[in-house]
Image (cartoon, rainbow, N blue to C red; front, side, top):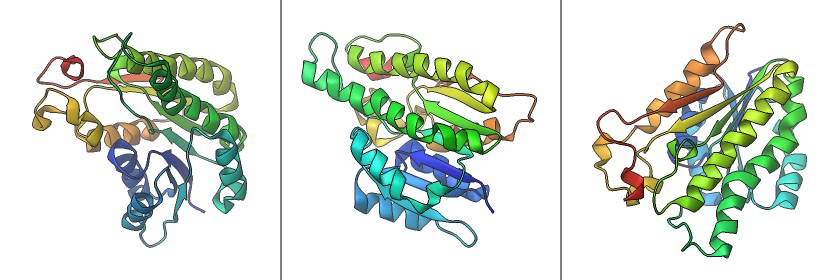
Amino acid sequence: MNKLAVVTGGSRGIGYAIARALACDGYDILLIARTPDPLRAAAASLAREGITVVPLAVDLTDNDAVCAAFTSCELLRRPVDVLVNAAGVFMYGTTGLSSQDMSALFRANIISIHHVCSLLREHLIRAGRSHMINLSSVAGLQGFPHTGGYCATKHAIAGYSQSLAEELRHDNVFVTTLYPDVVDTDMSAAADMDNALMIPTSDVAKTVQFILSLSENTYIGEMALRCAGVSSDALSR
């Protein structure tokens, strides 16, 4: 039986690129996103002989919906070997950000990860040795002007992931936090940067493949991916 990877935010961007790489490496894929039609199209494009790709459309900010969807998903009767939390949203604003928008950012970028991790924790432990990879951002390492709400959520992912790493490594669940700079996705359309200078989604996917390729003696707890040709504050201008 193939190993199982669960990827959130899997219908486009970084999540889709990672899911594609893992499918090519022989993982069965549970592909999760909120909007059904793009998700089904992404799953269909990933499917190939010998690989199971199951799309699961659910709003990860709705804990009851996530619990019901995971309970009814036949693929989740198996252990989970890899969990990639790649779903997230971006908004500009610090003190000018409304309380409602700040709450929405936290629901989408950190509380949704908590929902998924809480429900899949035992699935990861049952795998015997498994990996969780959480996508933060360079904005989870430092603050940038005009993006305080977003930066706060990405710092929260870092702290949450570091705590999980300490809790779960004795159960052979290894947690990695990735901090990519500006990646060439739809979310980065507002960045004051030439797309040719952004990190390709394929480079993030290759990073995940590298992390998973290491021997059992080694794991990477945190890794930053930086744009080579520009400073990392382009998203904040």
